[in-house]
Length: 107
Image 1 (tube, rainbow, N blue to C red):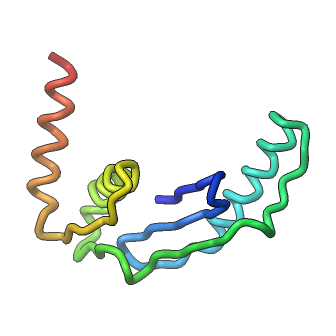
Image 2 (image 1 turned 120 degrees about the vertical axis):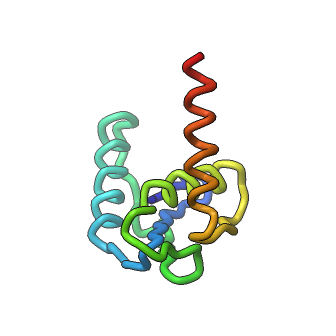
């Protein structure tokens, strides 16, 4: 999951497998520049943005099956201004809770 904060001028990357995908961050900054030029008609100073890669300081998954749930929970916690503080043992609970929330919206 990547998060761009325009006010703080940060681009943060969260990977529950702990891989630093620098190319993704470079692509996001290029996209941000393109959007600024297209929408605001002005060049964006990407050098003023701080790149933060969260590799090992965040919850890590213990298998290759939970990446979607981890990404959803990272987005959930971060959108509420919370620090992700769960672990892989919570994934079944989160899956059931997410399914319940989706089903509630469909009814």
